[in-house]
Image (cartoon, rainbow, N blue to C red; front, side):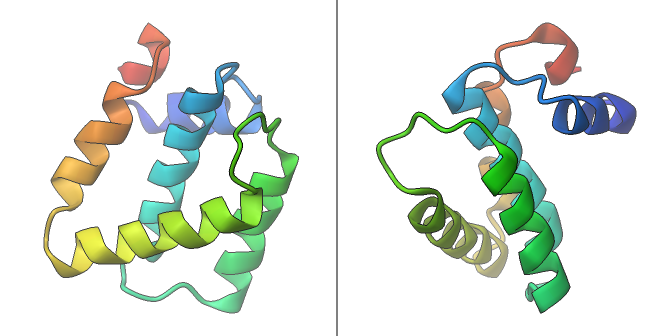
Length: 99
């Protein structure tokens, strides 16, 4: 994916499907957590982004954030972040986002 497409998708709320919004958020959170630690500023940024998303999932946004952050840390610790990325990328429906 071209980084500018990713930013456009994030900034323009391009993802209309709940599963796709979650996948985009997961990928963003993985990038933030890549160094193994999410500081307060990064946490606030990601939580603000999550708060701005339309949400139709049964899980609360806060529980989703916590669970996803733990999955990010686990994928980094076990060196399985490629699988994490591939799985989330497979959930992206729009062809221009997948590029």
